[in-house]
Length: 125
Image (cartoon, rainbow, N blue to C red; front, side, top):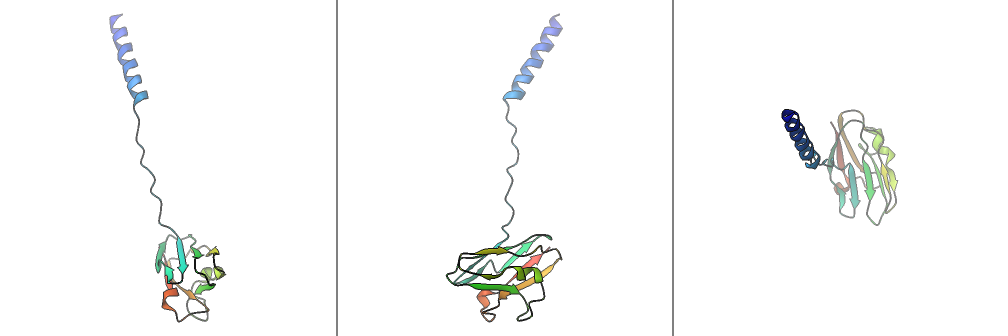
């Protein structure tokens, strides 16, 4: 009988400790942002890396409109999924299509193709 009481006491003690203990789970780390911001200074970041199947959001924080398209100018046929961004008025944002092929996609503002600050790349890996 004493053995049973002792075993029961140990079991209850372990249960109480287990219930009172807090297990720490790792805090999820946010993934990299798939956002390119356009300002009067240009695009930021100039280069972004995403996983296949991702989309990239372009946010126009400039006071003027921009027409974001795939390289090369004026054909825009390297990464046609980038062309879905297209014309953005001030304050607008839009995503590319799904970027599924591993490669590097250059982009620029079609209306200002010579402005290097508005050129960049999306690396799909």
